Image (cartoon, rainbow, N blue to C red; front, side, top):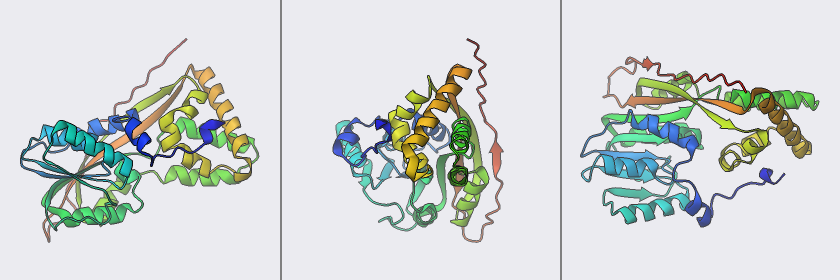
Length: 300
């Protein structure tokens, strides 16, 4: 079961061959671009920039008078972004290769902060957002995306059943903890409010990831990179291979019964602003329910 082997994302080769924007991240990034301010002359901070999808788009879309600062500790990704910036001749991009919890930027120096799925991967999201608030100007806009609690529920239902079938119900609790650490609209609202921002708007949508069966799903490169380590961590250590053999079989049975393995991914784009001192943090949190429910009944 070679797909259980870890992927080393730190190598320069991985950075060179990593997709410009994985399909997983693309849906979130496009949603974010619908809500981020597009004006010349801004100072924009891209937190968790990765290989620079948002950095490049905002630097080009907002024009040369806008300055975009990309922050990420992932060296391979930043090396690739640096080459792209040079190849495009962009003079309005600055790269900072470090943890965003400590930014070498002046207080109140940034107009817009963006983060596409960054909050999912920060070691300490509260520290990062607190630092973002420090460098944000009064009235600055923050736009972030995240997947939500309930994502890939079809997969987790099968994983839960596999653990029970294997006689390892004690590991179901670990699975539930893993599932429930996902964000909700309320938890993101509270985290932003507690770090100095006033949430003003949230847009929610959902999309589906479709696979022929469980075997192709578990071997997909992005699933192996982004999700398998977490799924392995909740499996019984003494029977990891047996657990995934059972899981793979159950997923294949699910796909055969339903014609495919389709996984639902709910996502949110949250917009916030930094209020002036003394301004109420209880500003209106308008929920625009843009949920796009793609319910396709396929009969074969």
